[in-house]
Image 1 (cartoon, rainbow, N blue to C red):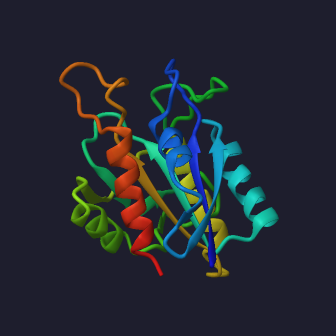
Image 2 (cartoon, rainbow, N blue to C red):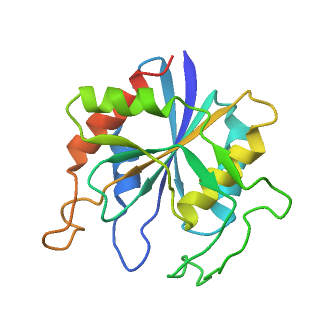
Length: 197
């Protein structure tokens, strides 16, 4: 049995729920070959990433899959790359609004997923859930966590890291805006995790 740390975010921007954490909470405790350790992250630059790193120190997972909410998207988006960039149009939950700042001063321009994102997206799609590979995790806290955690673990290559964005829940989406039901999101995540060995 392998161990996976899977994370979702607390609500932000005046919302009362975050689709990412609702989906993570709803996952079973074991999926495929993985026993899941679930962690809710604050929507805070740097702090969220440090929380992930601290949890891995305590639990020693084989894989870290970070999950975030992307309002406006209509599919599970398996992220290929995180940028060394913090830039926000809205504040994080501490009121911080960075503009064109690096996630890590001496870090590379980008970090690539260490998980097989094409395989994961294909597995979710085969399960009947709309899914795709994405080449932009944005520049908000989701990207900050993805980049920072991936950069931290890349040199050792012992813990594999990756990120997936999920659409907003129907109750969060404005009329006419894309969304995905919790059941469908969970179904897609399970299929993606099951595709990993």
